[in-house]
Length: 242
Image 1: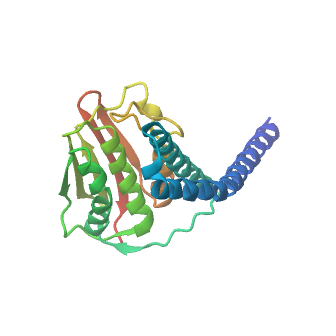
Image 2 (image 1 turned 135 degrees about the horizontal axis):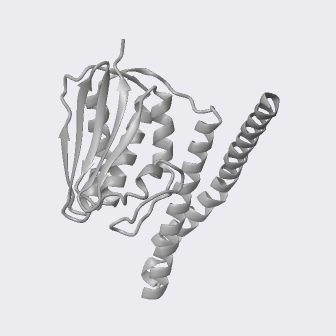
């Protein structure tokens, strides 16, 4: 019985590895034609825009938005497959959480302002340094903030907070958006799971799965507390630098 179980686990791991490699290869192959399509669409928008009818301009803009969504999906699939295959490189260093948070907010601010959403930073500048890959943690923060913008109505509020808890730093993204339905909450960090956004843009459905794997690679944890109609709080932990 034990031998059979071990064989089944080995087989499942091999299938999972092959799946990740296939997704990685397919994502690479899709990147080049998508880049060419994106360049062609942008060229048409810039050079022929004035000569197009309203209907043609609308179709071209829809094409542009679809290409951007496909590029984001391919990039997310590639990132996730690399993480799952253990091929993501993490450059750990001691870094200030306050710096990471200000970087993330500066990236997301234009998107929030376009919806009239107010951003607030409540992260003490003197929080202890954490051991992290700055680029990867900034990516996680931007992804969580972008989700909050996506699921918060115009005129809403998003807050980024931080505190020390024992030998960890906890960072939280808090919004007063639509919240997550109870039936989805246990699966929210799974691939292709998402709620109903206020702006109709679901995203790729991979951002939270990637965030979960990246935080785990940092020896941290990530979770969500959410009340439908009131908002959500996404929190993750990072170890304090020795």
